[in-house]
Length: 266
Image (cartoon, rainbow, N blue to C red; front, side, top):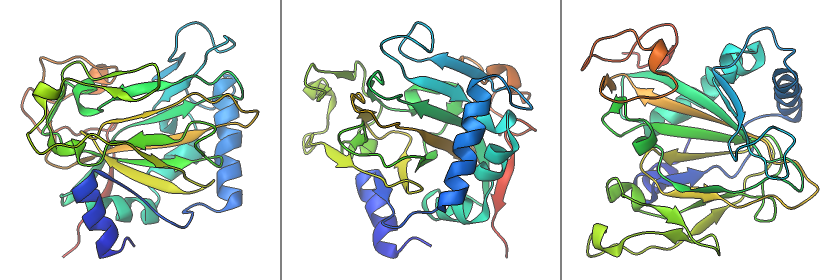
């Protein structure tokens, strides 16, 4: 369980990391092997998306391997997204009586060629959802350090609304329009290193990004984006998960593609 201080930090800062790993070494290794099978096309099922987020193929000189809904491709990840200790932690942070998987996402920065994930907010990239209160559980499958591209967050940015034109400067600081910020906003960057099997959480509106991986080490992670049971569908938006949404405009998102993984008991 998260401590009251950790829960408060999440709501105040928009992110928090646990100090102890959640996964054992054996659990991490099982997910690594499953990831390799999916990338090679040898898994029992297929994910919704598998691509080089940086453009080009998976063997380019700038690579971030992005896989969406790897839980649909391999049982190891299906078990991961619904593991009781993980979803109990998310339920402490996400105001809901029912927790569903929105989708998961691998972002794998291979050794030496792993490139940057630019500064962004998650929720503006999810225009089919409302309201913006989803929570991401980000689990490291390697030791993730400053050197190989750990996540960077701007504390408090989840309270500033959707920022139009959020971008990335050459020094990997966030590029933003000060006129869009509240008067008391202070833009500073926190670097969050996560050990293998460790976990961090962030709010759907928190500014975040990760620098390249020029090291000889792998930098693999599985992010699961969870949504409260009151999340509704916005039909005017478009997203890679849109074909899997079967409810009407304005209705609560439900269905087999968005499994319930936690419910509050009396």
